[in-house]
Image 1 (tube, rainbow, N blue to C red):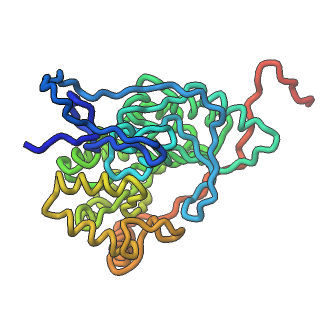
Image 2 (spheres, helix red, strand yellow; image 1 turned 90 degrees about the horizontal axis):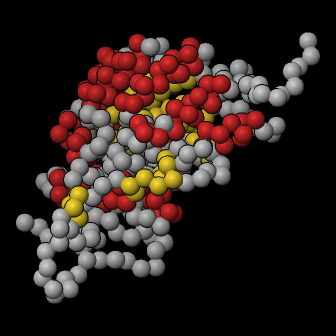
Image 3 (cartoon, helix red, strand yellow; image 1 turned 180 degrees about the horizontal axis):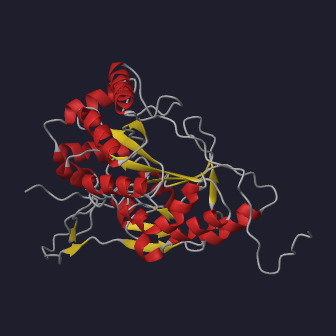
Length: 362
């Protein structure tokens, strides 16, 4: 039996989590490790549970200038994500909260109650210029804690009331709960949804994405949304060379049969703390393929674990990146999928009247 990771506290049991360690974030001046104190006293084993803290948001909209992204603003109701995807590129953001990108990222979450009201105020500002807002760009807005907090639903209610163009990315099945808001928005040309799929292998998915819905359940979400008239994009993200890339064509076929209209792909990204976490995961879960996976990852990123350059970070470069891109293009064309979806409407945007507002004279 292997020794427990030294970054875990004595007695902690880790179950159904992506990361197996909890190293301090890169901004921390100190690191904590478990050591034997010599007392030889057994610790009571206790399951590592999810904690949710509240943060009072001062702003709702986050702006970016990335040429790799099809949007310039986003809203994130939560920080951290209980889905626990080991490959998640957002893990390093937890270091800014003085928390670990490892287990803290998936067990110590931040909910932002009141974010919908802050968003409404920002949308009413005279200087505001409408453009599509993206939800789920950093962490999943439909992760399990949304069941209790309902912050995503409140945000959607605001966006719907303002007739604001909206794009959602999620793995969560809880999106089905909000079809009463999403379907009317889609009918107006205000909404599209991207469902992230990684593999059709339920066992692999359970290990890669321990608290995310199973692959077949995500396909059912695509079908449910499509039947309700919501345009759906299948997002193959990430494509992991040497581990999931062989599933590219079957994944696209399954998503198309479920009703997806469009598709996209993103290569595995291993920024900062994600690389050692992912390599530890490979060694634990697929030791026979670990070297092959990392060799191909490095071939796609100029010999590094990750290349953050614009235009490269999402797709990589070289033989393997080109091969995946060619296979994707051919499969999309054969299946009748599209890469781009029609632009969302911005001309319907209008702040709804509030109690006490002066009515316009006829």
